[in-house]
Image (cartoon, rainbow, N blue to C red; front, side, top):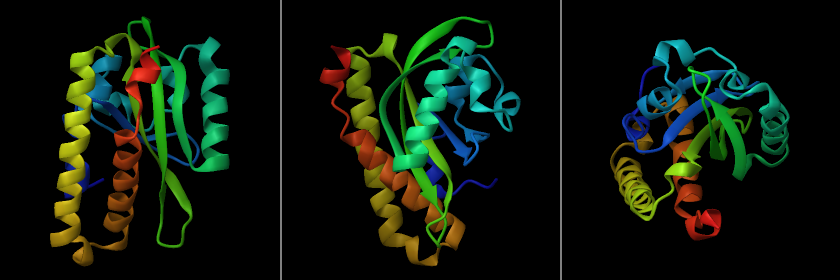
Length: 176
């Protein structure tokens, strides 16, 4: 899967990011996601999202999928994730849908925050990243959007929606 300029903003981002298809198979992820879970990226692509949660969290993940199917997004969803070594961590999942040019759901862009890492310093880093990414996407919109093919436009639109959602997260509320 070739990377558009829009997706390159996520390559080494401070947030865990993955893209899934409409049945929960991971199509892509960034290095932060892979490193946090302790896998090589090649070991993640093509796997089910359920492989990265312990069995006792499958219901939570399934409920998250149902919410996404019903609403097109998931916000502030707490789910336990499992690393390759078996260690777990509590994560906060945010997801937005990705659509084709006919408004059919292709999948989702999902960002996961490790709740144990939500320090003031980390939150500041996230907010700066969201702001920089939104600026980069605006630049792409102005300079390149009209020349993009339908798949690249779809990807751009999905990432724009994701970063808008992420920019509106109330981290103070989450930390409570």
